[in-house]
Length: 119
Image (cartoon, rainbow, N blue to C red; front, side, top):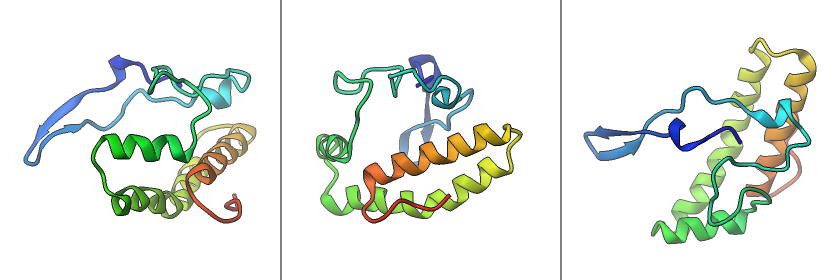
């Protein structure tokens, strides 16, 4: 929820304009767990309580087909072990690592089916 407009930029690549890699990006949720907002910017008029249906609709607005939308969600499952390893390798305190891994596992579940991923 720290991503403000100043943190977004575009790069002109060989395929056209693309979103630049993020920098100066922190997950405020593990530092301020009582903060209700999930995002700093409004996304479709909301800053919290997002679910898969909400992002399905975003995909439709962006003219993605069902296969493309589903593919994004499937990549989350494949990405989770690498993400948790990056957290384990970080300099965060152990309690913050645990909170961070629980948060990304919970959010991954919003978009994937099945039982909660083990962390």
